[in-house]
Image 1 (cartoon, rainbow, N blue to C red):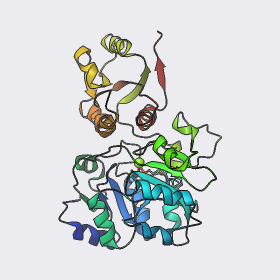
Image 2: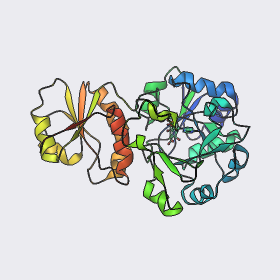
Image 3: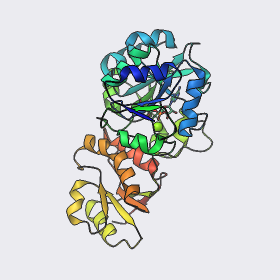
Length: 336
Ligand code: TXA
Ligand code: MG
């Protein structure tokens, strides 16, 4: 796998034009890109990631005009949201045109589109002249990559190149909102909060899977919902406790190689080994650090890690959702 820099955009484009796979930086996480209109190239994304074949891909565009040939029956709310949040960490699901291969949307007849806010990504899409299908550039089930090192760890020997764009600014994936129904439906919380979307479009629904695991009998709207995600080798457990209870729990924990996946404010009180993912009072910092912290636990040889449950409001909702998924939705309540 070649490691390219921001001066190698042409080389990245040439690989993509010949049907290859290139991991590219975006403002959320690194994406594993291929020509979205080349069926064979798209198929090879699934192979490289070990991705379940029924989990569709987001298509990345580099201008608002691109939507005209990719989607149809576009609702008014799309234009309002695109004007406000694009380029940026919002993915919108629309009905797709016939140009979109089934390999991209797994036969769903819809398309998830995003215009990323990262110059390297935008210049690569522009240089290619076609949209890029790109899931997060991790092995399926692992935490999403927020640095070039994370991509190399997972994708060495599986893809043609990665473009180094440094650390991703946001660190959690885009918010996914389905606009194919009467009321916009958030399928995944992410870089744009639900309240910000509400300010623009009024009523917004939040899919119940965001708060808990999907009932096995419900057909998932977003196939990605039903898979376990973001799991390092270490087992993650979520504790519903206040800070004192959490510290006490950790300091009396007898399990081997048990770590605290904690906030900076906990560090002075902890006797247990720990990995912090940032200040309790800085949700943006926590989002930026969370996936790296999950990978760090493995590097340190943690067998399991306990984290406190994050707030479910605003920016906290994306963190809550990622941590709960990493923990397989198991939560431990401490008796008050
Ligand atoms: O920030 C992001 O969104 C990153 C960067 C690389 O853009 N991409 C990303 O892709 O997170 P991925 O594949 O890891 O997650 C895409 C999610 C999955 O849960 C998938 O099921 C859902 O979007 N999705 C994609 N197309 C869909 C569609 N047509 N209908 C419903 N859900 C869709
Ligand atoms: Mg992913």
